[in-house]
Length: 380
Figure 1 (cartoon, rainbow, N blue to C red):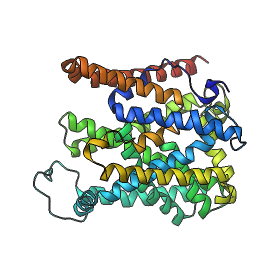
Figure 2: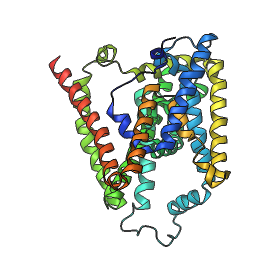
Figure 3: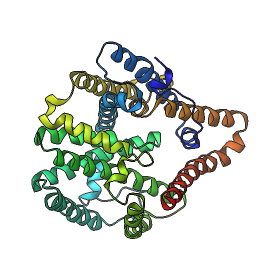
Figure 4: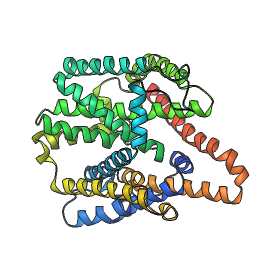
């Protein structure tokens, strides 16, 4: 079988190289290990035994997204469960507990009333939109919003560790839940994936903003207000740009703008239209194995000797590798190795240059790609 059918190739992409420089060698090596296990071992074995219908990235992804999402989700929840002190402080702050010494003063933090009122009003609003626009029963709409809180915690954990947000796989977790609750309702299924996946992705993006603001000396309240203004300005800009890129529904079927993730969501909705039994058996067992592996790796990292922890693979990195092409994981690993070599050879230069250079690679390729797409769309 050609390596390209297993997504192993050399791609001249700067974004994953920059990402690798930021996430470090342990996570980069975990991504490489996950890619080798998934695309170099399991995928060809499953295909050879007739358990995987197609190869290529999207053919393999129909199976690999389930163990990958389960691994990331179980590892994140296990890690969160072990952080009892963090959970106690978080919910204590929301319920009005006194601040511990060293915590942010009240005039710089986001007021608790803002948070609670925003969560209640926006949750009701999202559930209402789901009911009016998509026929999703209001209680299930609220359930989807509540589920998105849990998935957002997973997304934030994954983004913080790998700089990759698994919004697609987490959306499929929501699809799986609604496939059980509302079997046969494909519209509700896709709505659940969109709602939960996008809330999770937005939470991770906003957390990145807070981190950047903290590094620049901005208070959380300032960052929060800037994010609110960003929602207003972004909404005003995104809608016309979207209609420029996608003037009608036929645009998503064109080679220039295929929107592959949309086809994956639709495919999962069709598979789950008959409930959990619609998921292939190999996917169910793979998801169970991924979930158990995620729990085991987190517990191993927690209780292993300090000297051995750096040799334990990152469960988040392993899981993310199952939903990325192998070439992307390889590029991230190379970026991590390059940054580590620079830190060893020129530590002073690495301290001042690694983060700006890596950030420039990520932002530069993203902006140039968007500009090229806009130019091609405007000229067509």
